[in-house]
Amino acid sequence: FIDDLHKLRDMLFYDPQGPIALEVAPLEPTEIQLLMFLRAREATARVGWNPYLHDPKLPQHLRRVRCPTLLIWGREDKLIPLAHGQYYAQHIPGARLEVLGQCGHMLPYEKCDDFVRLVTQFVKSTDKNQ
Image 1: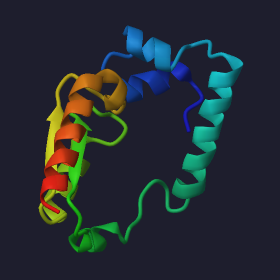
Image 2 (image 1 turned 90 degrees about the vertical axis):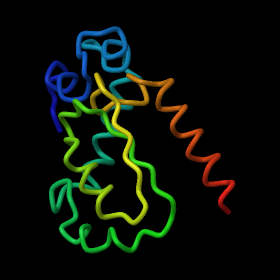
Image 3 (image 1 turned 60 degrees about the horizontal axis):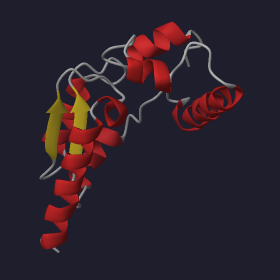
C-alpha cells in the first residue's frame, strides 16, 4: 500500500530505473494507469488486509495440493522473498520451483521470454500426463 512510486518500483523491480519498470510503473502515470493502480491496490486490500497479506492457516493446507504446481520466482523479489517460494516448493507435493536471476517481483515483465517458456513447457508436460 505504498503511495511513493519510487519506493514501489524499488520493491517490485530488479532494476527500478530500467525501461521496463519505467513503462510499467511510471513516475507520472496517466489517468488510466493511476486508476488501474488504485483498483489493484483496492483488490489487494480486500483479500490481504486482515490478517495482513498472509493466511496463518496456509502452511497446514499446502500438503493437500494435488495438482501439478510450478512456482516461478524472481531471485531478487523484495516484496515476497525467495524463501517463501522455497517453503511452498518444499511443502506442496511434487511442486517445482524455478528461480529467475536478475529479477524482482514483476517477472512476467522483467523476464517475459523465460516466464512464457517455463509456463508453456509446464502446461505441455502436464497435458501429456493426463
